[in-house]
Image (cartoon, rainbow, N blue to C red; front, side):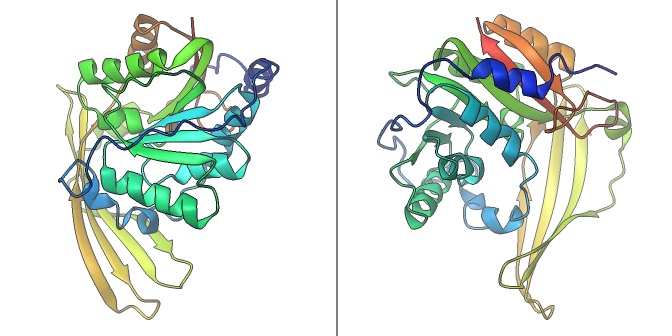
Length: 290
């Protein structure tokens, strides 16, 4: 067991009092990618919000960090704005980056529909190479976004991007799944029900999944079948999606963060400040740029 380095309340306290406002206007940068050009995760844009409609357990963690931190927030791998828009609703200005123009466009549409377009802005870009002419007080990468770049060099490039957009003393927060031994040893190839999500209109999304491990490259290869049904059980659509994620152990992540110029302040075994246990699902990192 690895104990969290600092209590979550203490980390939040350290972030307060920097003298900058988290409500400064977000930067406005035109999207550098045209929509509809077949970019990664474009095929998720239309269904993402329905598949993850009940994914909220990590939101308070990131919103608390945003409220405690100085200055606007940069989210790398923002998807359709699930976390960024929660920050905006809490009064924090945020710029979200996603490699998919369709995901970024959907996030902007949601911001406009909620009256948050002046507080939350989204653009399509590659988080491995992004370089904006400004810095932020906080950079976040929720929901395992870092793991969607699947080589050590690309993950290091993303951490370099985060460092490049943080002033000295700025904070980086992100999470990855915990590659515990039992999980990595599970080589079963039988499909399983990953989630059942009831939508606000009463329809239901059922996600079936299989996974294949490549331990030599530290890769997980999820394969999903996503069924959409009416509340009465009539099938509306079936979608099939595959992607890859690179898993990282705590020691390796600490080394990568140190090489990128970060000092790790805390590693949690979840989003409530709990310690890291072998069987925890998530590893949440909070690091400060030196």
